[in-house]
Image 1 (cartoon, rainbow, N blue to C red):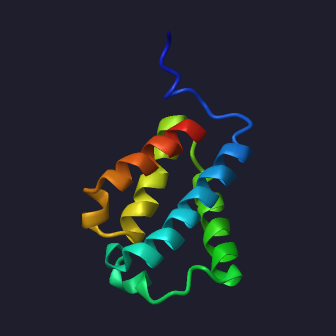
Image 2: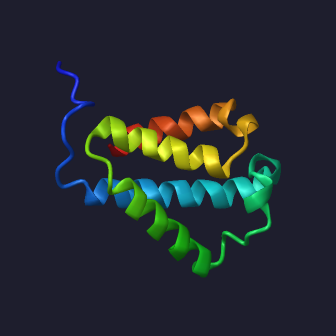
Image 3: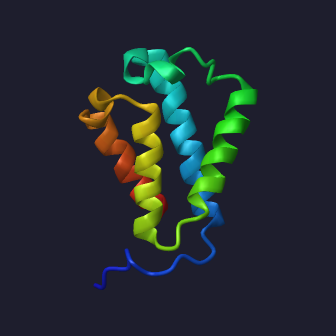
Length: 106
C-alpha cells in the first residue's frame, strides 16, 4: 500500500469540518472532566455555549483549510491543540486517541 500522507488535498471540506467539530467536542468534554488540561488563557471560556462553538469551529475550519497536504492538515490540527491544551493533556492517552481519530478523518 502506498503512503498518501504527502498528497495534495482535494475535496477536503468534509474532513476539515469533521476535524474542527471533533476538536471542539473534545475541548468541551475536557473542560467538564479535566479543566486543568486547558491552558489558563482559555480555561474560563464557556466553550459549551453555541457562540463559542461557532467561533472556534469557524476559526479551526478556516485555519485547517489552508493545509495543502494531509500531513500539513495534521500538523495544523496539532498546533491548535497545543495552543489550547496543556502539556499534561498532550502527554495523555486521551491525546493519542484524539490524534488517531483526526487521522481517520483525514
